[in-house]
Each structure stands twice: as structure tokens, then as C-alpha cells.
Image 1 (cartoon, one colour):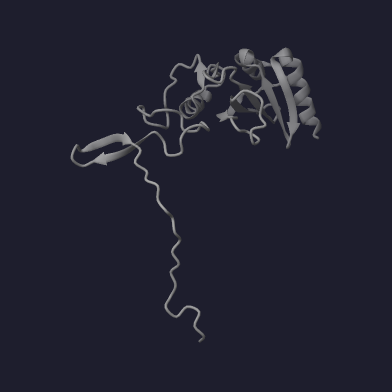
Image 2 (tube, helix red, strand yellow):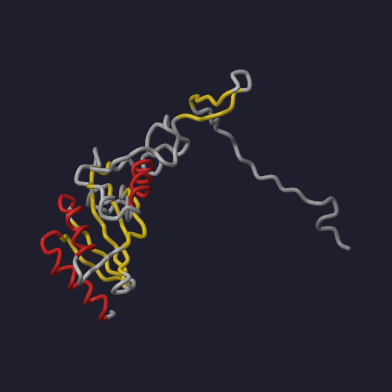
Length: 199
């Protein structure tokens, strides 16, 4: 285990204090889990405290932990994972926060802290349905505005809810119920006529 990672973990423990649920050092990276109610405050501290100085948010994504580890997961269903970079100290950090309510996943927006979180949070909202409280423009970014549901949730049907096609009579795109028919898939073996004959 690197001394730098141990030093970073100690700095996090000192600066964040009771805001931290856990700190783990694994696979050459530090992961800190923070409480949802202090997520925004923790983000401000991680950016502004000179002993941490995480100036950049590199990535943010939503996670659906339903059936995680083959159903052995006992925690909250939805989480948000962020990756931060400190140019000053040349270290990286993974920050994880869990939405306290599975039926209405809500966490604070960290867009005021790192503006790069803007589209990442919109993506997590669009694909997982995670609400980012305080986000100024939380709307879909990858799916159509009329899309029903959140396609990266583990309980989203594989075939979807509706399908989209171009209607040549109406000369526009229309939505209709999914029309996937069950079919039997029988592999075809195509060989040349002389296959297997002695030469």
C-alpha cells in the first residue's frame, strides 16, 4: 500500500470527519463514501481544503446496485460515483454517495462546486432517474424527451416500453407499443457441396 494513499486517506478523515461513512484503499485508489445529507458540503471541502485540493471532477455516473453481488447487497439501491483529480498533489479520489430513498433517489447537485458535473448529472438523471437537487437544468440528455422510464435501471424491460419508427404515410416518426415477436432461432449450417469429401 502506497504511503501517498495512506496520507490521502488520513487527510480525508481529518477534513471530512463525521461526514465520512467509510474510506477504503484498494487497487491503488482511495474510495470515500460520504453521507447524502453532507454530500455538497463534503464536495466543497474536498475542493477548497489545501490538504486535499481536488480542483477537477473527471467523471460522475449513476449506479443501480439492485442485484449487486448476486443479491448479497444490503445497502441502498442507487448511488452516485465521482472521480476527482488534484493537480496540486497529483492524486485521484473516488467519491461515492448513496441516495437514501430507493423510490425517489435524490442527492445534492455538485454542479456549483465543479461545473463539469453538469452533463454528467443530466446523464445520471436520464439513465437512472437520480434527481440532483439544485441542478439548474436537469432534463434528459441522451434519450428522447417523450421517453418513458430510465433505461439503465436493472428493472427496465430489455425490449423497452415503446418502439419508434418512421411512418411514410404520416411522414414523421411515430411511437407504438413494442411489437417484438418470439421467434425460434435455429442455427443454419452452410457448407460447400464438396465439404468433407476426400480429395
